Length: 624
Image (tube, rainbow, N blue to C red):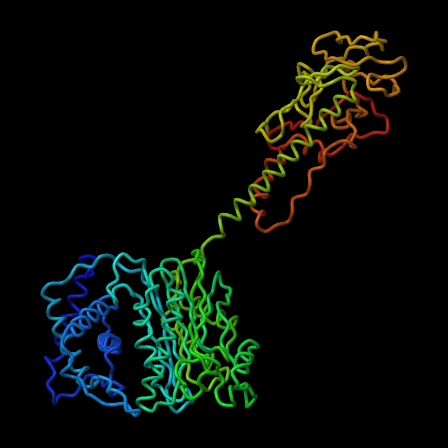
């Protein structure tokens, strides 16, 4: 049973203390540690009664649940394998049919406690090996009678479902349920003791737990109706069950008890309670011949304020036992579950419940011990007078920070950003080709022909050339061999350009242009350019470099180009998700050549401009 040396040591220590407190085998005249609430038990109910008696008795001594589940399973198996005929009490039913074999619950309880004591002694001598540890779900539970005369709520928590039923080769499973009785507590007790047993007995339990839960609700309702008929019981109960298998959450409910999921601090609706004011429930009841009327609240036949429940045999078929179920896949972002009866959810909204839990965890450093107490107190302060039961099941450690955002969203954001960058680069390349054509030649290998000097492409700003001082824009530089630095610091000497080539009229045959880097051009008509446009006059040439004048007529290289065809980078969308990435890209873009050409100051701008002369602002020292 023990999975580690420390765990086995803890379990052995508990067994020693438990056997020291508990007396030996109980005699017939000795009182029981706890008395069963029902006088008679059928053979179908023996397993559920045995498990409930063992769990309650062990948990009263603060037994670890893993150990309590193992001891309860071993004790129940011993009793089920023994001959129980000596405890039968034959009692015929009222309609004269064959008598139903039943057991006296007091004698059965005495047998259970004695078998439990024997099992503890055997385990203390030879502790069984535990296959694997079950995932631990931290829970907080609290229930009060409030202003009602009797407490009719029942709940059950089974965090180690596999150990309790000795299930092999199954994923981790846990079971939590709340039952809200009305007209008596018998129906709630019966459902709390037998619903999970009926669940395991379903054939589709391994393949479809959700459907198995619905059939378990139906079977529990049918058997309790039979028990109520034998014992003249007039009560019923609503119920909500959450069954966790691995990373899947299965929810089944009957009536107005509810469960709520909280994900990333936000409430998530998992179900819709069965109430008479629901349109589909009202139509179902009226189709069966019943009615829904207002008497303080909407009630079925003026009596019950729920439309589905276990029991209530005198209100069948209007109050049916057909449960609904939902299944949800958990992704690790879920915080906790809140299971509660209508005494809580009728007065506390989901948003208020989340606020109460959040405030308590912040004030107590993540300690969840009293979370359920805070929720019950909030419902009572809000005016609830009904019985209140609350179970909070934490799906992750409440002391740890919430998980980060989904990686899928971040990956999608990166893909979108990369697509935008590629689109911007394509626009810039298209603009380079267009400018090369307008200069009188086709750009081939970064060179063109025309009246401008031969050109070469400079390094793009996004390739890490932050320290280059010979590139003014991200499109092109102004010389084939690059500019020369003058002796005066902070100035650039641009080489003189060759005079413009005279316009020639070519023959009808296509002829190649002459000179280095020349490209093929179509025939030109007289008075027309190679592309059919009228001549626009000679373009200015870059004159010989002259010393700078005191009048400050140097211009930045960006002034040589028209701003009409420049690509305008789209402004980044002010998204909270992309904010950090845009902020990180800021320094890189600030070093970009195109950005510097656009945003640089013009301290020496004058009305008289000399084309082809540039004076970029070069820092004189590292401190500038």
